[in-house]
Length: 150
Image (cartoon, rainbow, N blue to C red):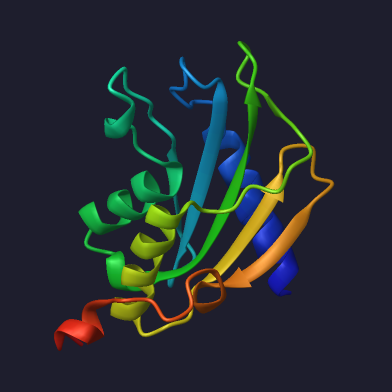
């Protein structure tokens, strides 16, 4: 059951990746966030000519959930990425996992929701697929609880 849900999230992330704004790296990433009620919020990477201002797909999806007042409802996340073609398709065999910054943002959502968020990662060609828990990707994380916030 868990893998099926993860693959559905990854497919939603694949569709989001089609809309990536990646004119510099040509690497599209999509993310799909599953909320507690079963609804899905997606995001895609958004690059900027000032590279440091670029946004990751996971951050965009989580911020979108937060903008809907749903930050504490995040149950799982699907992530996929690869070389972005002009038609919006992505390709590649490498497993894409959240970067360090995104892992910290996912940890924040996990802490606030009181869950160890499931994270499903895949390669663009589907040959690689892995399930992680938030605590596996960022062990010993610093989060809201360290500041006395529950």
